[in-house]
Length: 594
Image 1: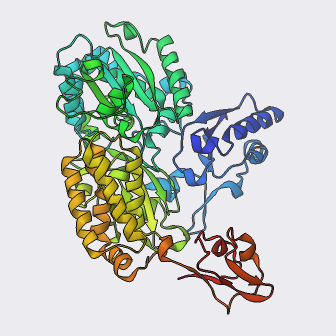
Image 2: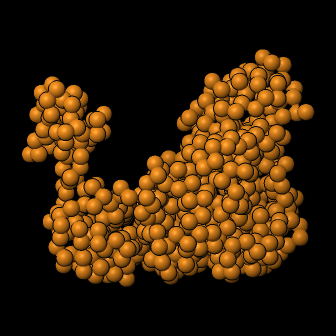
C-alpha cells in the first residue's frame, strides 16, 4: 500500500521548522527502504494553526499535531514501518481527553465546510500537475468550450456570491458592469493587500492554492472581456509571492495563461504588483493608484473602477477569497452554491480566528453559522477558562459584539445590524482581562497610522477621537467626552472620503454602545475595571504573602522596589513605571494590581 505524507507548508508552520520535518522524513524514508512506497508532499495551511506543524498520513487519514523535526524518525519507523500510530502526537480533545486520529472527528473541523480553502492542506501548491489532478483548470476549460461570457456572468450573478473583501457587493453585478464598459483594453485585478490586524485568510489561500486564483482570474477575464490580470500583493508575503510567481510561470508553459489559451481565441496573462503594506490600499481606488506608481490614496466614486480604473481603463477588482469561490461555482453550479449559507449571503466565509481563544486558526464556515459555534465549538472557548467578554469582527473597520450577541448568525446583513461588519474575515476574541476602552483606542491608533491623510475627517477627526480616548484612559476624562465621541464619530462616518475613514469610528461607537459602564468607570471612578490602563492602576505588594526573596526588585528596571532579604518589600509609587515586571516575576502571588 503506497502512502503519502502531507506536511503543512504555510508561513506559520514554516516558521516552526516544517521544512526540516520534510527533510528528516525523506532521510528516514530512504534509510528504511520505503522510497518506492512513501512520498512526502508540502502543502498549504491545514487551518489548525494552534496545533501546527501538522503532518497527515494518507490513506490512513491519521493527523499528527505539534510535530517537531525530531519526531520524523518515530513517524517513519513506528507508523510507516510497523503500522503503530504515534499516540503522543495525536490531538487530545480537551473536553473528553480522548486521543483523536483523524481531522473529521476533531471539534475544530466538524462544523467547517471548505470551499475557498478546499485545496489548502491537500495539494502541493508548487505543482501544477497536482492542481490539475484535483480538478484544476477544468472550470476554465468548461467556460471556454461551453459557455459564452454572458453565460458566465449570469452564473456568477445567480450564485449570489458577494465580495469577501469586506463590502459584500454582489460579484456578478460587478463583473456585469465591467463587461458592459466599452474599451479595447480591460483589466482584472486581484486585491491581495490584506491589512487587518490578525488577518491571514488571503495569504493562506495564495500560499496553498495559487493556481485556483489564476484560473478564477482567467475566467473573470473571459467574462468581462479583459486580456490582462494583475495581482496586487503586499511584499511582506514572500512565500505567497514566490508560489504565485512559480504558478504563473508553470501556467504559461502549460498553455493556461498567455496567447490562445487551450487553443481558443481567448488570450489572458497575469503579472504581480508588489505593495508596501499600506492598509488604505485595500480600498480599490487607492490600490489602483499604487499600482500606477502614485501615492495610495482613494478617489471619489463615481467613476467606479468598472468604468475607469487602472490607467483609466475598465477594471474589475475582487479580493482573493472572492476569486477562490469562482471555479467551484462554475464546476458545481450556482444552485449548489446558493444551497449553502443564507438566502442573502450564500456560500461560506473564511475567518482568521485569533485572540484569547483556545483554537487559533483559519476557519471556513457556512454563512449563518453563529458566533457561539465558531468561538466555543470550533474555537473550543476561551484560554485559561477565562470569561468571554467580546469579539471584534471586521478588523479596524468593524465593531465589538458581546455575550448577548453570541447566537447571532454570521452574515453580511446581520452583523451590520448588530453594529459590526463582516470585513475581510478577522475575528479577534477578548476575555475578562481586556479593557474595551483600550481596545477602541488600539484600533483607532491603527487607523491613524494607516490613514493616507488625504481627507480632513479621517486625518483630523480621528486624531481628535484618539485625544479624547487618551484623556479617558489616563483618568482625565469627563462625561461630556462621551457625547463628543459619539458626535465626532458620526461626523467622520458621514463625511470621510473612503471606506477606511467612514468605518474608522466603528470600534469607538460599538464599545460605547455595549460597554458604556466601562467608559463611566474610567471617567467617574478613575479606575480601569480590567486593570489594563497603566495610568489608572498601581502595583502593590501584599506584606502577608511577600517572603522577601528580592526577585521582583532584581527585575525592576527603575529600582522602584524597596527590598531587604526575608523582609516584605514595598513599591515606591512615584518611581514605578507600571511595566508589570514585578507582577510577572513574583512566584508567590504577592503582587496585586489595585
